[in-house]
Image (cartoon, rainbow, N blue to C red; front, side):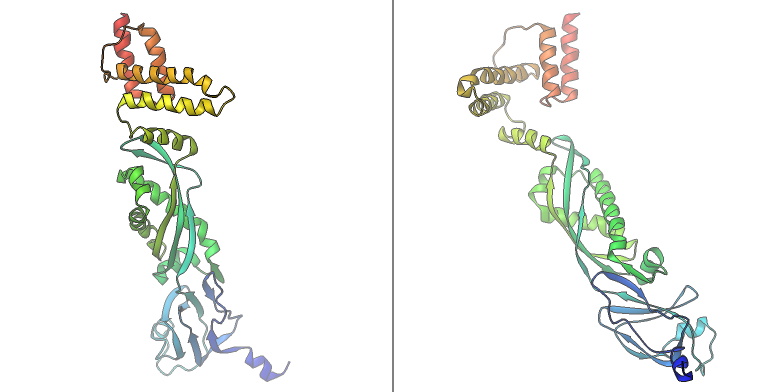
Length: 328
């Protein structure tokens, strides 16, 4: 190896990041024990920023452009290294390039349903998913809390951490907001805006700026959807006489789909009417007076309704106390 070849490997004349990749957030320029030539060129491309470090301390920052490196263009590094204004020797410094572009189509979702307290339906477990986009907002915070001294730091390395933080933020927000499930589902655009406001501070804590946040779907577990479908069909806790009629009609459609056909619907119709009548009596919403019924039998039927979710625990407990009083 010749002397000139050896010397050429000791000094860097051009510092640039030519292959940022689609998911790279930060890249450390490879020094390989070399030194930067005084007067070397720094090339920073669009959507990039370059940062010089001295022993882990932030030095000078550069946006897009081409720069000649000397004591005039590196005032912070000059101060940190105690150079005089005439300093012209090669020097060592860590140089990091950061991608300032917006990273889009990031996915978020609830791996498990989130439990919320709905003002109309009580405790509900909801699922939601969507996408978001972000960019580096504060370089120092991002470097300190995330990328650090890594040679390459990618979106893949942060995605899981961001997803967890986003879900925790959403859960906390929903627990305090009191937004009804119906309102969430009815206007996903407004709901997305509210969640973006709740999630943005979480990303800011990592030096990231949340550029967009969208809810693509919000739903309930299948068994809860079935219950709400039935409640919707009778007008969301409407007239209990309507509920009895609904149960009768529902029994006919179920019977028609079974081997017994409509011939087996009679039992379902009777059960539906009985359930509706009993609810009207037990909840004090009945019309005409009904024949007296054995309190224990009534309590047993009310227990079945409570198990099926027709009666709330509070309604069942109140009626139970009333019936037990009659037995005494």
